[in-house]
Length: 288
Image (cartoon, rainbow, N blue to C red; front, side):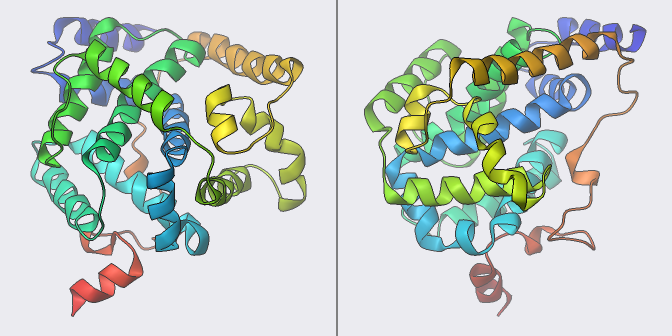
């Protein structure tokens, strides 16, 4: 508990704008490593509910034909940036790699902007609902300033000037753009099945699907043409997560950061370099 309090005291001393890289690191890898990962997985689903995003992802075939690889590469890029910071040489290298990949496709500025917003607000909503404590306002602001800086390095235009304005823009975009499309369901199903495979044998996936749906709100479920779970199912799933949060409050804090980039990725069993990241078609093209 003393270690945990030391982390919180450090966060309290820091400035959410100038020290956003440090605050995000502490929040994501010392305070809420498991929750941050789950929230970013849910953020991925939210992007699928925008037909233009889902159609592009479906067209590339990566989510259908190389789901694990696409998941691993996305996780690597996000975590390399969050762990090392956007100002670091390594973090900057992965941002450049991401920009190079994105540059091969026609993606609207609004779709970039919406995707960026999910990295800020989905973790905040998840942690405030299921984390062992709620986020400090400084942590919320730090996530905004952190990803705004990343967005500027991605050359995303018209990023709202405040935390509140960006959240409202994101909500308005969802209300306007969320819609059901065949591509939405295809990429969502592939990702859903991959996440279930992390925990269960294939024979149990179907029976576990309602637990996944219980973590999604109604507009998201409708966009994906998924069934609305019963109140009882939502209560059980959310109750289990809240019980976990209570236990987490009592457990000793992680002594070391739980950094995802130190784990072994299934599609990168021997480790990776920045050149290993991306679809095979692009890696082959750039290698020649």
